Image 1: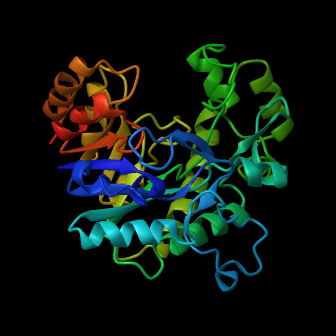
Image 2 (image 1 turned 30 degrees about the vertical axis):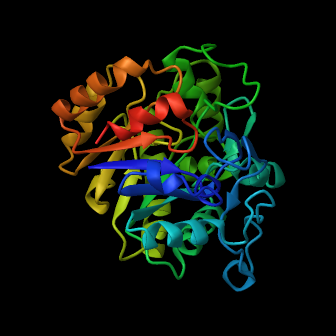
Length: 349
């Protein structure tokens, strides 16, 4: 099984998209800010999505009482860009899953730094909303519900259904490679007020925990991870309730400490969803597939055909991932790939 990822603006206004699209399309319904190339589109060459947006109408009745709410995108070309694109694809016989990014939102983290992830040095990760806050969980659940509202869809794909950490690839990022994996893990432990309260409820001294993290150690690591996982489980429970009835693919990582778009699996996560999508962009990702497969759910290997992936390496990479236990392949990305990489998408099935 192969699915291709796309944005609504890749579909709308491009009559040739259907000729290139596979039978299954994972289409962005709620997505973080990005500057996206559109090399195949007849009307434009890039889209500047300047803030995290819901690509559906932002209905007042759905968001009433919530300060954490999306803004409508003024670059999408339609007040219901996802709905319009999904309906077009469905009419053409495609299966469509809603790609929903939940806690990655720089605009809201800047507006409300009090609900964003904070490291032990008091530095706010404004791109990362912390699931320890009920407001954040409510926002994520409403976002998911509104993404699929009143549409015939074949599934949902949940990205950032948990906590993001210190790593944040973005414009002009200057932190890549600055820390060892161990240090990055410590810098990804959230120390926001809600997390500190949760530590105290478990008998930890928040000041001592923060002091330890600043010194480069986490003596109560198991408790800290269990608290993060509890908040992740609460977030996921609300989101799953909001999309009930649709098959759910969860972006996940077998490492329980992982943060980011594919957060670490909690002990309860795999049993509650229909498939696990694991990040397999680098060559040699077979161990991630094997580890995820141990949870007993179909494993979706997330693979890029974009730079720096060498064209000749794509097919051997896919074969290795399938041999390791991947039953599904998710290809990135139908709209971003230039003409000379489109054939890689077409030959992956």
